[in-house]
Image (tube, rainbow, N blue to C red; front, side):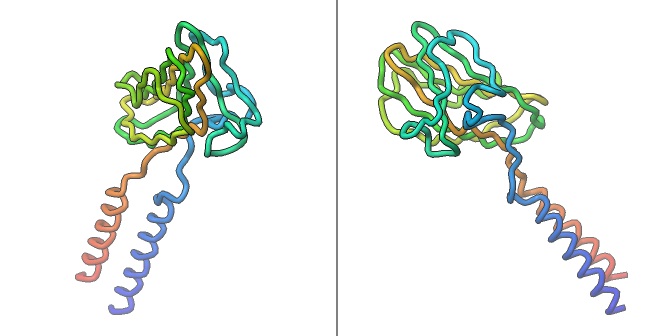
Length: 193
């Protein structure tokens, strides 16, 4: 009987270890295609609205953001907004980490916003001050099986820069805890038998 209990305990511990290894945050699946614009263009993205003075520069250094690669996107539409968007699959009720690098030149009039689906803007600024790249992080909730991330730009006298756009699902730590509790309960029940 003791030997059987030890075998069950080893099996339970191995299963919990495997579940944590598989379900852990070691590698989040990236949902954005061409988030650092390393293709040298807007492949994977939809550019709409006032598309004048919008493009990708490679190499972007010293202007490229602190994220991945050597390219970045620039936007300087005059008089109205340009919109850059991408749609990807999501799980309803799931949380997602949204990250990107943004740089303003301090020009006026200018405008920048980032919108997760049709929800209130993650960020919205009019006439943002000049400065180095800002690394922005947000947590967003998916309300549909597909979600659209959109960026809106206007900078009459200059250019706004975007780089390192990233979206990934946030793992639920409660799921792993529940699995561990369930496995422990099975072990305890088996031990009592």
